[in-house]
Length: 154
Image (cartoon, rainbow, N blue to C red; front, side, top):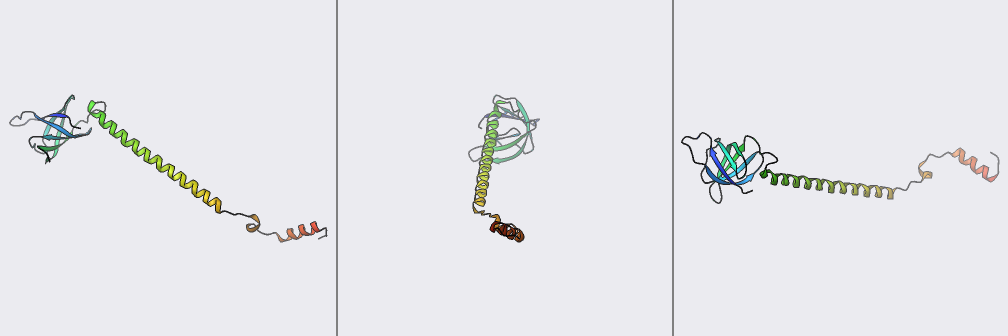
């Protein structure tokens, strides 16, 4: 998200004029800002995003930008409200990530169900259960049945 931003140092000696820059990356807990000058690490700043209230934070890291200026990682002391206009794209991103994960989970569950059904079908197809081969024999009863059918007495 590229949003114009104004950064003011908190209690700077000598006072520094507000610095204008733009955001490179934005989250509810912090912001990555490109500024024309390097601010000291651990310095307290006030960050004002275009169209939002002023937030206080601390500079956690700095590094030279590839294009121009210096990148600053600012951790905000109070996170941006979820209902703020700048939080809307973040909510969309999180919702998209959640839906993508949910989709992968559903596809995975469907694949597991199909595989399980296939394995059950395969096991049933190879099962040839015939009780006369697997149940114990009762030879005395068989002799009795044969003699009864033939009409003889036991």
